[in-house]
Length: 391
Ligand SMILES: *Cc1c(COP(=O)(O)O)cnc(C)c1O
Image 1 (cartoon, helix red, strand yellow):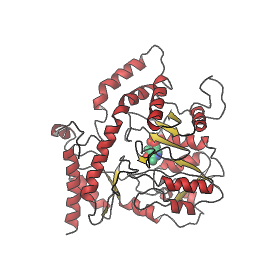
Image 2: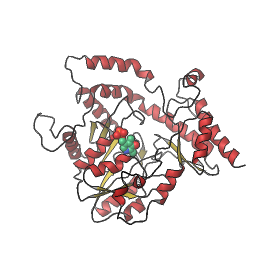
Image 3: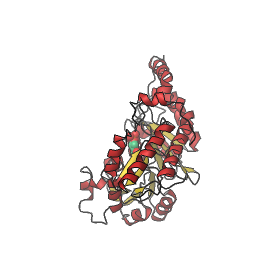
Image 4: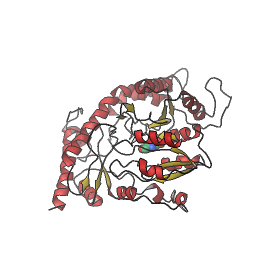
């Protein structure tokens, strides 16, 4: 494992001896820069706090890094999903196929446009929407497919591209957590009609606040998203509203801070990848435990998620060993009270694999601030539990 962390045992003690799931010191290295930007922009002569030069420069930097036609910064990943669906003309009467296991905005963003989310089951290895299952959920009302990269492995985008083309459907890629991931040389976010990234603090390019970005290879989609994010105005002349938009503008201080942190992103992602590889190397093949499939293609190391038959006992053991873990989606989306009414009266094959994954999943800390000693402690603690309970 290559060491990126400059921290020693003293820093680990600062976390009370526990291995934290989210780093408590995510922005410490950049604290002086953050304070300087707050002062400079907060007291700047032009008093420009939203959608100014810093936002534009962040969009340009991300666009160049990706090779996208456009990148549009907006107020959150959730808002980005809503902007995309609206810009693509999805609305009442339409259906969008989304994964049954995932975050609430996958279903809510569709419902907010007036369309209906139709849940598809997941692949048991990647825990992302299974293209073969998604195909069986397509009806004459289906307008778009919306796979999401939820855990460590990207959804099977080549097959979704083929499926969308064959069925004449739009393809929206929820790549909120997959910034920096690539599959077949194509960055996450650029596989479909549009994708997005979330900058909320816990995501791979997180920041101290709310924000996100839409990414697209289509200039016209980018132009429509720009209008929608600022009340339907065209950005040239204020006060002219061409479409019914929303307020999803981006903050200048955050944009300047993200520009400052962008050059370090690759190294932070590499550190996460090295930690994930270490876990897989030492945990794969243990009885009663499934690790993410090894490899580097289409990998994003936003989280490192195991499937454990005795998930709750493993979680308790790790907690007793000072290791904080997280269960991201304890229920599938169709099993949530908010979305259960959506599926009522729609007989179908159900979501057995999503439900199994909801019951068995457990995510280990994988953030770049972990020391090598902490990573080894996590690995040892998981192994000790499995070997003890299997004797
Ligand atoms: C975090 C997340 C979102 C929403 O992003 P926010 O910035 O928190 O609104 C959407 N989709 C996925 C897969 C996410 O993980």
